[in-house]
Picture 1 (cartoon, rainbow, N blue to C red):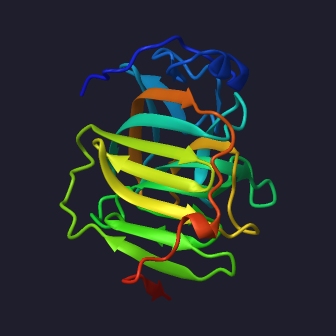
Picture 2 (tube, rainbow, N blue to C red):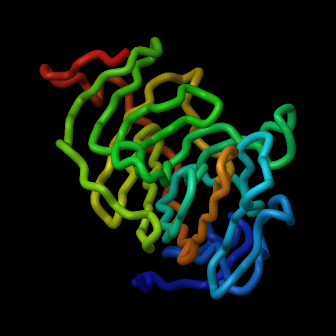
Picture 3 (cartoon, rainbow, N blue to C red):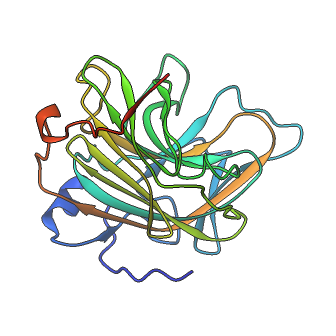
Amino acid sequence: MASELSGPFVTTLDEATAKSGFVSLFNGEDLSGWDGDEGLWSVEDGAIVGQFGEGEKLPYNKFLIWRGGEPKNFELHMTFWQDGNNSGIQYRSRELPEVGPFSMGGYQCDVHPNPPYNCQLYEERGRGIVAYRGQDVLLAENGDKFLIADRGKVKEVRNNEWHKFSVVANGNHLIQKLDDVVACEIYDHNPEKRSLKGLIGIQLHGGPPMIVKTKDIWLKVLPDGGILSPEETPLPIAATKMG
């Protein structure tokens, strides 16, 4: 799957913000701009590779972290190949040194073999599953969660093939896409739980041996702002409260 995007390689948010279009966060050769456990991450055949094998064990989920800054509003595209367990794109996230080196918490676009989980919004070390693939969800100011649209049954996508995962984060409005098709859409009105800026990372999940590969990492910085009020996103009549 070849990328249709183009732009300069950058290692900082300032450089990305200075450009009007997309920039690349990966140069295809090494991990410049990224930081992670050196025993877990490498570059092979133009892709970032994270892996651990039989007899190895991660004590917790570990991430390769982009050190260029903490984007607020943006459009992000990454192409993934994954086998064993699951991975994901961490965004608008924070490091959790109290858990251990290269631990993160925050929004995650899941890369998962289970179809409803694949490209779901999961909040790592937070609210857990926010929206399955195929769901549009509103998170209310008081913490209640509502299903505001159901996109229907989702199809299996084999993650041991290359697929494009995308995130559009604009204010408190989040959209995640799988192969350019909207997977879930979220309005996060909870001021105590939501995140409006933060780090980007790639997950290696603790548990069984796994491998994840990613390439074609493109970021476009969007203008600040975009926070929608609850009055601007009223609940549809057919909305249902979720547990």
